[in-house]
Length: 96
Image (cartoon, rainbow, N blue to C red; front, side, top):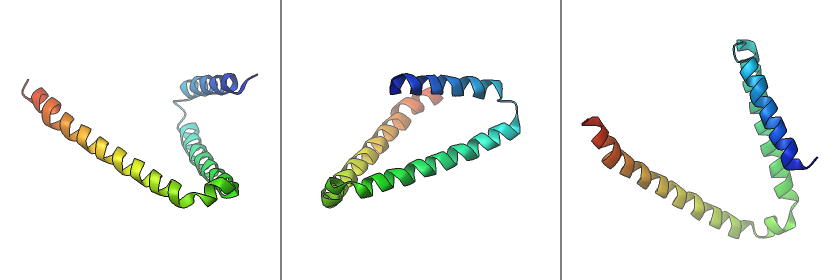
């Protein structure tokens, strides 16, 4: 099977299992801990992968500057959209 098919099947299987076991509090807590551990492992191995890539390491300064710019612009955009929504849309809803 192709990777996207396996990923979609795993996602659907997870949704079904989560739906069936949602009332078991112990399972929910275990699932949350396993999710956190999985995310930490993924971040660690992503870091290993980046550290092993010569082209990323040699261009780290340029990539880092670009990533910082993208992050700051995304943050600025989010703040502007939030300000617009809270000022014009949410303000009008409270009058209704």
